[in-house]
Structures are given as structure tokens and as C-alpha cells.
Image (cartoon, rainbow, N blue to C red; front, side, top):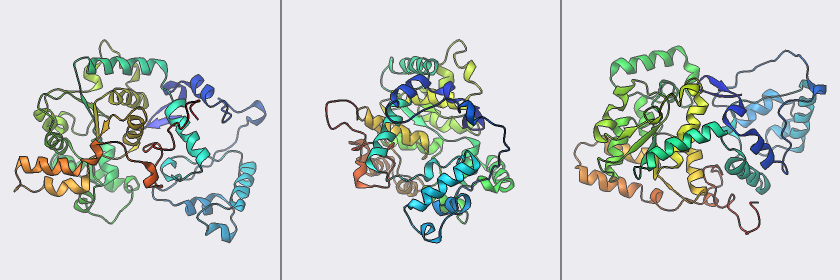
Amino acid sequence: SICFRNNCSEFSDIFDVKHFKRTLLADVRVVSSPPSTHLMSRKTIETKIPYDLSPLWIRTRFFRQVRNSLLMEIPSAAFYYDLAAKLNEDGVLVLKGLDSKLSKNLPSDLQKLLCKVAFHALRYAAPITELGNRLARRMWIEGPFIAFHLQLEKDVWVRTGCLTGLGTEYDDIITKVRESQPEYLTGRLNMTYIQRRLAGLCPLNALEMARFLKALGAPRSARVYIAGGEPFGRNKALQPLVAEFPNVVTKQKLAQNGELTQYINMSSALAAIDFIVSLSSDVFLPSHGGKMGSAMQGHRAYIGHRKYIKPNKRGVLSFFDDTSISDAEFGSIMRKLHRKSQMRPEMRANRRDRDVIAHPIPECMCRHSTGIF
């Protein structure tokens, strides 16, 4: 199952399973269900995995390790032997929510396989693709447009330890939820809200994104597509952006005749539709980090570099708070800070700790004219 914002869908609801299997046929064996010889009823033991765990935590918790291999950065042969022994003993070991913990610096063959999965094997199911393309056509048929991924949902404010900027009424709600469920706060527990914000750990809100977009030179008539879930505070949360850029639309506004009805309770499908429309935009800007932003960055580079501007939050926030500088000066500063992001995509080779899905050059690019890999 694929779970997103507490809504779960089957893989086949979101992706084209036949295409996935066919594309990876020569690389890995993909099955839809275990063989009958391995089907059995057995009690499942679930261990809650903390957000800030390390690879060492996983090894010591789940695998019987010799002391030396525990201290190694790269798993030893003993690690894989113990992993196999654990699987034989327990049947299936599922480590959920660890995608961001996986190594970014993999052997070349695995990096190429990751590229093949991300950019070729994973294709949205036909109904989602068709609807996403219809909404995208309704956007670009009227001319160029900008796509924002605004992460202003309630759970985002809770997890990041940040405040909404909507006033004490809304901030108090977030603070109470966070205090009652401290496990949702992801890392850096000893930092205050102000410290988090200045460190670039908070999403830019609608007011900040509007000012940022205006500083980069977008005209008031610019057409803006907003991707993301329902913002905490609803219309009030979006009001500063709509005030500066009246031509703001969402998938709900673009859809006609109940086109979204079957997906109302399928957050993953709605996110997929956002992705398809956003990929068609002339410019894409995320208000915060996250999987969609990384995937969008990589896909836009892979298909021929469509402009992707990631706000330098550490660099811009001090200027956001400085009321002494003019709009013209603010715009000049913003354009200088983001000059590189408006040029060609960065090579991953310069930073081996970067995710190949967000930085597909050069590993994911063909070097010969024969075949994909």
C-alpha cells in the first residue's frame, strides 16, 4: 500500500503495474503476491522507528552483529549474512519510512537501476494520467504558467515545529497538537521557532511566496497553479498570494463535472495529479523541501531542463524581515541569490551525497545512442 496523509491506496491504484513489470523485466523479478508455498498466517510484530534514527540503530535493533561490523560505515559481509539469517528466521522484515535514510552514493549499476525505476518504470495509471493531462491542457492552453508546491497543511506545521503566520489563534492550535504529540516533531528538538525559521527549516507561507515571486519579476497577471493539500487556515492562508496574483488556480478549480470525485479520499492520487500538472509548467517553485520537490527537480532536469527555482530560505529570510530596503532593492537581491537555479541543472558529480532522483546528471543520462541503459 501507498500511504500519504493517513490515506492509503494500492500501488495499482496509482501506478501502471504492467508497465512497471515490463520495464524492469531484465533487471529484477517483480511479483504481485507471494507464492502459495509462502502464504501463512502469522502474528506481525511492529516496532516504531524514530524519525532521527541512524544506520547503526537499524543494525543493532534488527540484526545480530559482530562488534567490528557495527563500527563499519559500509556493511560488511557479516552484515548481509546476518540479514539473510534474520529473513530466514522471521520470514519478512519490512522497514517502512526509510527512503530518506538510504545511501545516496550507490554503485554505478544500482544508480542506473534507480534511474530506470524513477524515470521509466514508474508511470501513473491511465485514469490518473489522462485526468492530469486534461487539467494541464486547461492551464497551458491559455499560455505560460507557474506552479507552486505550497506545503501549508496542518501536519506540515506540526512536524516542522514552525508557526503559520496566520495569527495566535492558528498558532495556538498547532502548538497544542505538537505538545500533545511530540513524536511528530522531526529533529532539532532544542531549536526555537525563530531559530528554525532562520535556519531555513520552515516552509515559506503564502505571503512570503508572493513577495518572492514578485521579486523575481513575475507580473501581476501571471497564472499560478497551486499544488498541495488543503492549507491550514483554508482561504485565509492563501489570501496574501491571491491578492498579489489573482490568477491563482488549484486542481479543484480546474476540474469539471465531478472529475475529482473518485479521488477525494485518495491523497496519493491527488498528489499524482498535482505532479502531472506541475511538470507541464514553465516554472516550478517549492515552498519547502520534500519528496515532490525532489522528484520534480529531477524530472524537469531529465526531460530537458524546465526551470526549477528552489528558494534559498536561509539567504532570503533576513531580507524578508528588513523593512528598510525598497522593493527594487529586494528584487535585485532575490535575483542575485537565485541566478544559478535559473540556469542549467547542477551536476550530481559535484556532490556525491545528493539524491540521484533529484540530480540525475550524469548517472541517468545516456552516453550512447543504443538503448536507455
